[in-house]
Length: 106
Picture 1 (spheres, helix red, strand yellow):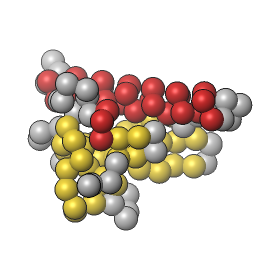
Picture 2 (cartoon, rainbow, N blue to C red):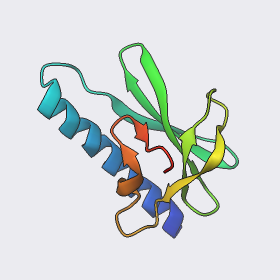
Picture 3 (spheres, one colour):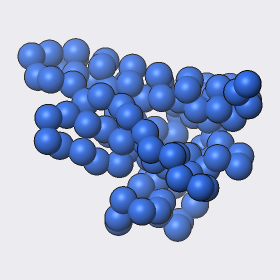
Picture 4 (cartoon, rainbow, N blue to C red):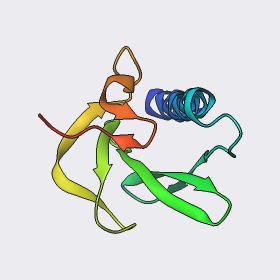
């Protein structure tokens, strides 16, 4: 049985994919779109954009509480400078991300 955080994470993945699809439809309708995948570690889910031989981290989500974190300088861990939003928010975290990653802190 899935926890509330796991259900919210599935919703978050769909939100990210939809953002990518809409951006490509509006700006580059003939190009192949990124596909969202993820890997699961002990503390975080790593959300990854993949297309052909191109892969990059979109964001990290902390499993304990659903916090959305900016990708760090490596694939291993998120940036240490703060939470951007939460996947359990009413909008599923959509207000703190774009098609290419998390928004910067203000």
